[in-house]
Image (cartoon, rainbow, N blue to C red; front, side, top):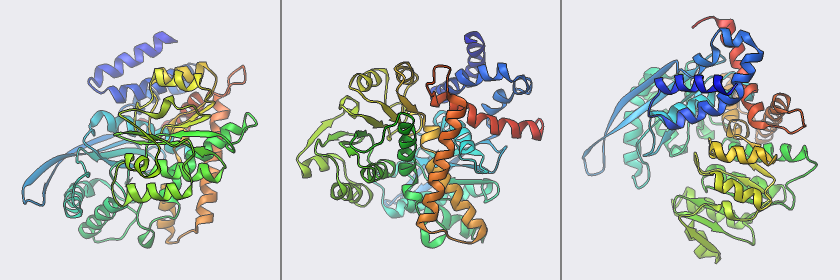
Length: 446
């Protein structure tokens, strides 16, 4: 079996050199899917996995814009339309200096399986730009977004490709992108999700990823007759996902002791309560400040240039960015008694870290399963737009909770091993793969 995996990865590597993030994502999936293909030759014969790792379409374009000094700046825009077997392409736009084709292909590939797990009719895609919104004025961001959408509008639409936000793309950016699309096309349609609630957005969308990852962790803990109540929790990141992870953890009776950003992390042994969380939301969402300011305000420690994985905890939520948690971090977490790791970010754990978690038989949830709450509510936003209705908070939250329960059920179904251990990585990969693979078989060689 190892030889088959190696052969497949060598072939993918040859076609995609210099794309480490994409190859890492493919390897993580191939290691569980290829044994499944051997047991189900219909998928192997049709070369479903070979087709799934090849994007249906990759768009790359120039984005010129004028800064506030009236100087021309040029960025690069992307959209990776990975797979549309079960619905229109769906996935976020990321504006960050690190954005390149490898990162977006990895995110798009993960998105295909994640969207499949939600049970909603959504294919997978991802896009963005190497534009950095940090330090830019509202006017500069508007001009960039308008230029970006002036090219992207040709390739997206409510029944074609529905982008959303991601790192660097919040409600402000989605608003500017939507406004330009509407201006060019002359139509008000659900072409983007993450919109404002007064113009087509869904309630609970800001909270969805953070709430969803905690809901998934609660379901995992229940398999061992545990709850979050009284547990000590470490969270990385301090943006939208981290903020609502903390909020839901507080509702569940847990104590959250860390948050982080690119400069380092804060450790508050007293716990981040509702008042402190409100301060973080103001600091990050309105003032665009740094997390060290929390430490200065509340008199706790700030660890510059470090990650929070050496802090003793029961549950960990890696919510910042890809590959933020490595093998050494994983060994530290396990050694300190951590029993559950649920990913709020996309691929935040390295393959070596995942191996440590599964070898130790702790509860580990890959992002394609545990952070699917965000795209799930985006899918619900698409439904509301199509129906021209709006559901209330309770309705959306109830649907989100049920979707996360269904994803957990799928992972248990496909991931339970002979000794009773639930391998959520295996369960998520196979569970997400089967639905897409069956649709691809039904639709022929396209």
